[in-house]
View 1 (cartoon, one colour):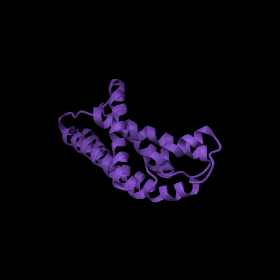
View 2 (view 1 turned 30 degrees about the vertical axis):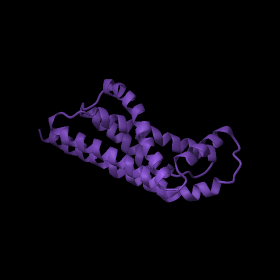
View 3 (view 1 turned 120 degrees about the vertical axis):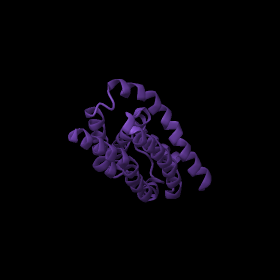
View 4 (view 1 turned 45 degrees about the vertical axis):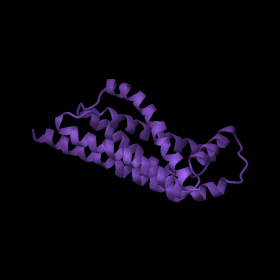
Length: 181
């Protein structure tokens, strides 16, 4: 019984860490995006992948203020899903949306790593992606599986919701580019 309650409190802490981990990661991006974009603004892309990465970065927001609005939008969504997940945890919970958002958060780290390889240098978000987001995501998946809160079926069922989350998150980019010129 004591071990089960320890697991419950531990997973609740891990769940509540999600918005905090997200903010640490996005703060790195917010702080460094303008210097990165200035550095590569007039650079002629050497490869198709470099051109694609720069185009995407420009569309997602070149200014820290734009990225901040995006971060707030995503933080509100993540916080709401985290709250609902933690609130329903004592009665068994439903981890579908939490898993869907965690999937997106985990998978986007590989875009940071890929951009770092493409540009052969630092890109905004890569440090926290490697040091914080990947370990947190793997730990969270581990505990959710270990406590039988998710399984392979739920991961599979969460994929369409993860795909749906991407355009919902991108609304934040639209808000950022419209509100900050």
